[in-house]
Image (cartoon, rainbow, N blue to C red; front, side, top):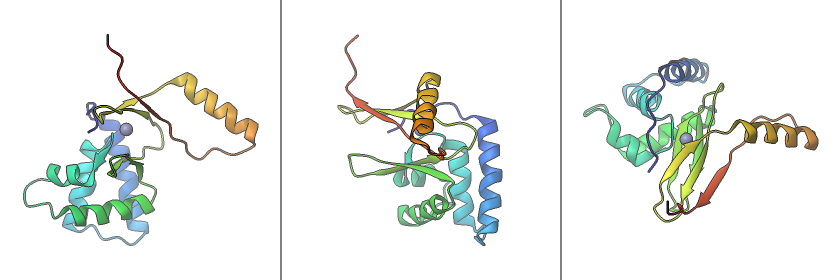
Length: 151
Ligand SMILES: [Zn+2]
């Protein structure tokens, strides 16, 4: 399960606006179930959540099944609104894709805990590599796996 960092209001509002725009352009209606998932993601989905976790976060009555939540997650992924990480536990986890900010993940292989991290040097290195490879970088993701060292 991902450690929850405090929700960033600016990220939330920016993503909600982007999501609304892209869903409208794609002709997706703002039905109650879809809206509930989108609002929950904006509020709680700034770092990885599984479909089951999102389902349990939906307000009572606004919800639906994990299967219907998963369908909405697929729609949003197709619109480039989510990032996805497939865990070695076979569970897909999702977080909102914020065009202006992103982070990477470190997975504790003993506990399965996933934590976000950022590193400016890493970002610069990746840009240099992309440059050397002659590609216009669209996205990238880094996952570090290991076990926590004893203090
Ligand atoms: Zn994350």
